Amino acid sequence: MLMPQQISPLLAFVFKVFLLLPLCYWGWYALAELATAVVVYWAEPLLQCLYPGLINTIEQTGYRVEVVANVTVAVQNVPSGMVAELPIPVNPLIYSYGLPLALALILASPLDFTRTTRNIIISTLVFLLIQIWGVCFESLKVLFLQTPVELLGNISIASWQPDMIALGYQLGTLILPAVTPIILWVLFNQKFIAQLTSVIVRRPE
Image (cartoon, rainbow, N blue to C red):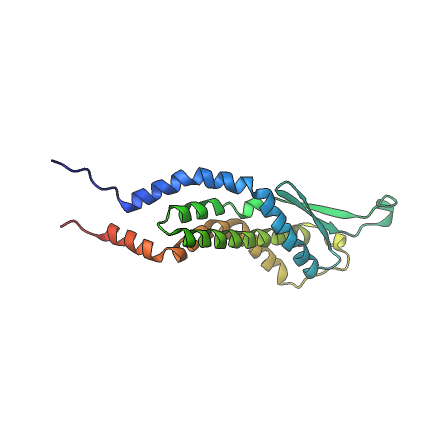
């Protein structure tokens, strides 16, 4: 009598990941406003410390934020009782789109409850840092690469800083959110990856 073939551990793992992804994306979006509040809490004093007098505040609306910068314009162009400000809209979710995949990979891996919980917490904290990175560099990109110099008053930056701002923005937008889930999963699951590899390379007798 023929016995049904055992499902490959790799196929079973991939199947679990695809089943968990919709749930993880839902949770990521449902908690986006809370995560954004944490990002604003840390990004605002960081930007104000880096460029005092330039960054006024960061205002949150739902999961979106506006970084409000003080700019310099001619007095006659500013209505009485008002100040010149430049709002910079930023969507922090752009910098954490890899978190649902990271969570799905963690939940699909054969780890105990304690290690799974630890890995979820670490991954969430890492992506919060990436969001803070992204909000800061996107704000700096708009201010120093897209805003006319005359609006920035006496604020000036070194000749090498625009390139660093552009690099930081590209890292936060294109690279970090995409590769971080895989890096974290590899770091968390080296034994499991070794088991999967042994199954793949094993040859039937």
